Length: 79
Length: 494
Image 1: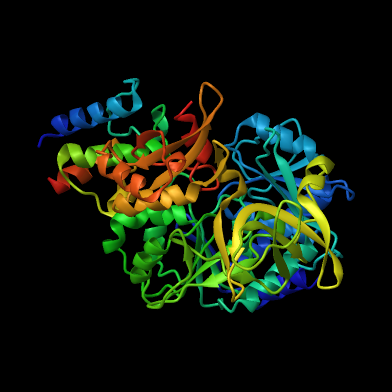
Image 2 (image 1 turned 180 degrees about the horizontal axis):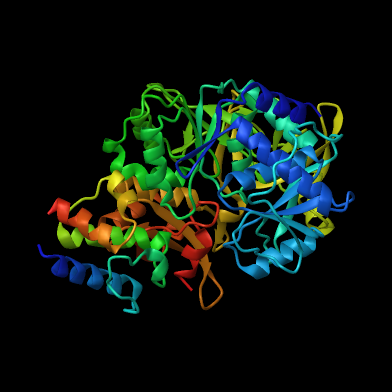
C-alpha cells in the first residue's frame, strides 16, 4: 500500500476519534502536537488503526511509534 | 536514624554498581552520591536551616532522585510537585505546606516566584553522605491526595513511619539483593514510588524508571524483557492493558511481582503467573495514611486462593500494623461479617496536615488488646475469615444505596465480567436528574449486544442491583496514579 493511502486512513482514524482535523500529516508529527491525543485516546487510536488495516501490533511495536513516520513504516511492515 | 545510616552504608558499599537506569542511561551509586553531595551544598546555601518542607519538581532524572536523598540527609521533608499537574493545584499544595524553596532540575525553572534551587549540572563538591540528626518525629515527606471537598489533603509521613515500613517490608521476605533489577513505574507524587526506589537503594540494587513520554505498559514490558527485571511493583491496571498481549510475554528472570493500589482479580493473576513462571506474586494493600502498604498476601500457584467476587484477598497485616474491622459505631464485627477496615501501628500517619476536621472523622481511639490505640478508618469494606485473612469487598463509598438497599458495586462488576468474556467493566452509582441514585455500567469495549448480559443479571441479582444504563468506552481513563479514573467514568452518565 502506498504511503499516501496509509496516511489518509490514519488521518481518518484520528479525525473520527479526536473529532477535529487541526493537524498536518507530516512524518515528524507526534502525539504531543495533536490536541486530545493523550494516553487514553492513544489506546483507542491504536485499536482503530489495527482494525482499519486488519493488522495486529506487537507489544514491542507500540514503543516504536514515536512519530507519524514510524507509525507508517510499522504499518507498512505488517501489510 | 538507622534508615539514613543504612542508606549511607548501602551507597558506600556499592559505589561501582548501577543505582539507576533512566531513559537507557545507567548511573552508578558513585555518580548518585556525587549528585547528592552537590545538591546538599545548594540546599545548605540557599535554604533557611529552619525550613523543613521543601518542594520537589518531579522530573524523571537522576537529579530528582538525588534531591530526595539530599533532603533526607539534611533532615528535611520533600513535597512532590508534578510539573504536569495544573499550576493552581501545585500552588495550593505549596501554600498549604508553607513551602519557600523548590528543588528543580528542569531546563527552565518552573516556579520563579519561589526560592528555586537548581539541581541540574551543579559544581562538583566534596563527597558527603553523613546524615544530619533526625528523630522518629522528623518528617520524611508529605504527599497530597485529592480531598472530597476539592482541596488536596496532605498526608505527612515521618522517618519513624518510614523506618517501620521498611522493617515490615524486609520481614515479608520478598528479598532484594545487589544483583536485583527493580521496576519503578510510579509518578513521584504517588507513594508507591517511595518503596520502588528506596528498597532497591537500601540493598545496592538497580532502579529502572519510565520516561514520562513513554506508554507505561509497553515500556514496562520492554524493560522486563531487555533488562531482565527481577522485581516489580505495579498497579493492576497495567495487567488489564497487557492482557491482550500476554502470549508475547515470557520473563523467567522475574522473581517477585507485587501488586498494590487497586483490587487484584484472580483470573488475570493466574494468566499473568504464566508470563513470569519463576516469580512469587503478591497482593499488598495499604493507604498512603499507613505508609505505602501494610497488608500482604502471597498468591499460591496451582492451589486455591481466597477470593471475594473474584478479587484476591489482601491477606494479613504486616509486622508493624494491627488491623480491626468495625461497624459504624467502631465496634468490632464478628468473623465473616462485613465492616470497615481500620489500621493502627507504627506506620500510621500522625494525621492529615492541618486538617482537624477530617482528622476527627477518620482517626479514633479504641481499647485494643489492653492498650488505648489510635486507629484510622480506611473507607474500605472488608471481612476477615477464620484464618485472619482479610477479604476486600469494595470501597465503603463505592457502596450505593438504591431504594434503601445497600448495593456493593464490585458484586455487579463481578457478575458482568463473568458473562463478558474478559472484558473489563466498572459499575458506578450516579445521581440522575431527579436526584435518585442509579447504577451505571461502563464496559471497556466497542458497543456489543447486551441481551445475554441482562438475562444473566436477571438470573443473579435482585432488580434494584441491575444497572439502568450502559456505556461503552474503548479504554478506561486512568488518573495520575495509574488507577482507573472512576470519577471520569461517572461523568459519562451526567
